[in-house]
Image (cartoon, rainbow, N blue to C red; front, side):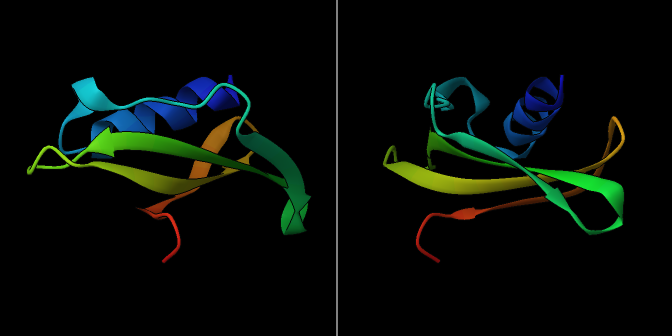
Length: 76
């Protein structure tokens, strides 16, 4: 369920959602402070120039609720 919520947020944040791809095995879950859970994953999407970029995605959950979302170009 957390993976679906995070993917939906990535799609909503992408300039061109139809180009978003999620590598199948590139994700990791961690328990973090305050009883929260963190999902780290990657995504690829094309920008306005048609170039495919890689993104690092972080979704923090408080229970089943998305508490924080960060999506940035990989390596930045």
